[in-house]
Image 1 (cartoon, rainbow, N blue to C red):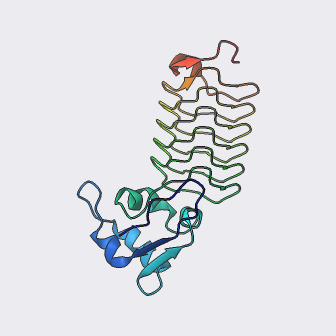
Image 2 (image 1 turned 45 degrees about the vertical axis):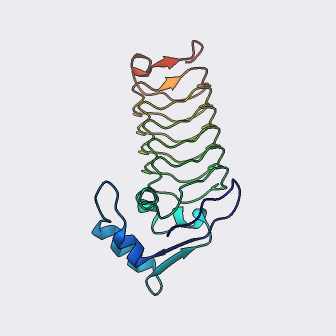
Length: 204
């Protein structure tokens, strides 16, 4: 029905028909009308086809990428993917596996990444303003110079992450784990020390 599982690094083509979309359900709910309209606008002959996941998550259906994956139409597996400089604004990548992915310089403004696995991902210089990273696994991720203004990092695991020079003004860091994180030169939100779970003793 959906795309088959792939080995890490293997390109995966995606083909979704309108009938498949309309029959799909997540928690007993079918696709929203806005999502169906976006599908119809992108479809040719009632079918949407992408060469790989990168094309899908950077295309017009990116706001529904996580929902369609949850419906079983494909695996949202972006481990090691090259998404550097990609336009991922408002993309829904909740729960996606993106460990080791290259997101350097990518625009993830207002993206939904809650619960995503971004362990070891390169996100240096990425734009993550107002992004939802709540509960995300960001251990050893490179977020140096990233714009995380007003981002939701509540409950995120940032163990050993590099946040040097990152902008975190107004970010929600409630119960985030900053153990051994590099915060040198980072612009931290007011009162962050009182709300995080753990932080490096040498942090600013």
